[in-house]
Image (cartoon, rainbow, N blue to C red):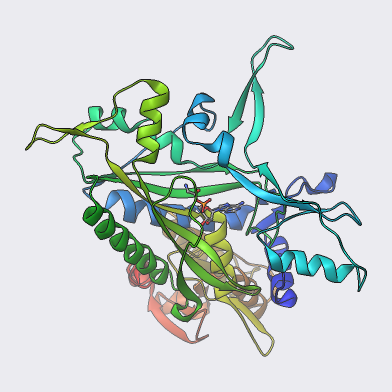
Length: 437
Ligand code: GAP
C-alpha cells in the first residue's frame, strides 16, 4: 500500500502506547491480520457500536436486531455462493514467492519496487477462497468441516422467517446485526484496515421485489449512511461515493462510501442491492418457504434486500486518522465526545492534599454513574492534560483550593484548551449537554 507512512506509523504507535490497539498475541511475535483492543480502544469500539445500534434499531420503527451464531450449517455457505465465489484473485511473485491480490495494482507495484529493477514475473491468477475453515465434533478423525462466517449477512437471512413470525414487522423492514467475521485475506494490512478477524455492522432491509422500490431504498440508504458518518465528525471533503464497476455474485447494484486514507481513497462501507439472491438461494437449498404474502393481492413473493455493511474496525481507523491533530508540541484526538473513550477526566490539583482528593473523588464517583470518567492524580496538570488529549478526552475537570470555597471546578476543553469555571451542582448537566452535540 502506498501511504503517508509517517501518519500511519504515528497512529499505530499512539494506539499501542495509550492502550487503544495492540498487535494480536504480541508476546509470541504476533499473528498477521489479528489485533487486540486495549482498555481505551475497547471503550471507543463500544461507543461506535452503541451509536450505530441506537440509530439503526432504537430510534427506528422499521428495524429489529438479532445476534446470530458465528458458525452455521455449512449448507448455508453453499446456498449463499460463498463456497464457490467468495474469492480474490491470487498471484505469486516468482522471485520471492510472496502472494498478492491481482486486483490491487498499487500493492503489486509496491512489491515490484522492492526487487529494484529486477524483472518480476507473476503466476497466473487463481481464485483463492477467503472462507476460514474449522472443524467441529468430539470424535477424532470424524470431525465435520464448518466455516467461520465470512460476513455476518447469512445469519440474518436464515432467520428472516423467524423474525417475521415472532415480531410484528411488515415489509418494508430491516434486521440489524453487529458481529465478528473472518476472512483468510491474502494481504491483510493497513493496520486495522484489512484484518483476518474483524467486526461488521450490517442491516438487511427487505422490500417488495420491484425495480422502483429497489432504487428508492438504495438511494435512501446511501444518503442515510453518508449522513451517519458525517454526524460522527468525519470531514466531508474526505468522503465520497464510488459505484462498483464489477458487482459481487449477489449484487444488482453496489456503492461504497470511501474515505481518503493516507494511501488514497478506499472503502469504508458498502450499500448493496442484493435483490432476492439470498432468500431465493436459501429457499432452494433448505426447501423452506421464505416467501411473504401480499395482503392486498394475496400473492406470495420473495422480498429483495438492500444491505448496508460497514466494519467497526475500519470505521475506528477512519476516526483515528481523521481526528489525529498535532500542533506545535501538542498532540490530540479531536474525537466527537459521543465516541471519545472517556467523556471527562477528574484531577485533584495536588495529590498530597486529602481535602482536594476527597472533593475530587466525590465528583468522580458521581459522574461515573452516568458516563465513563478517568481519574488522574499523577504529575503536574500540564502532563495530565497532555495524557488525556492523546486519548481524546473532551473535558478535564480540576478541583483546586477555590473549589473548597466556591463549590465550582475548572473545566478545560480539549480542542480549544480554553477553561471555564462550572458549579459542581451543574457539572453533570453541563457535560451531558456538551456530549450530545
Ligand atoms: N455483507 C456484505 C459484505 O460483507 P464487504 O464489502 O465484503 O461486504 C463490508 O464488507 C464492510 O466490512 C467493508 O466495507 C469494510 O468496512 C468491512 N470489511 C470487509 N473486509 C474487511 C477486512 N478484511 N478487515 C476489516 N474490515 C473489513
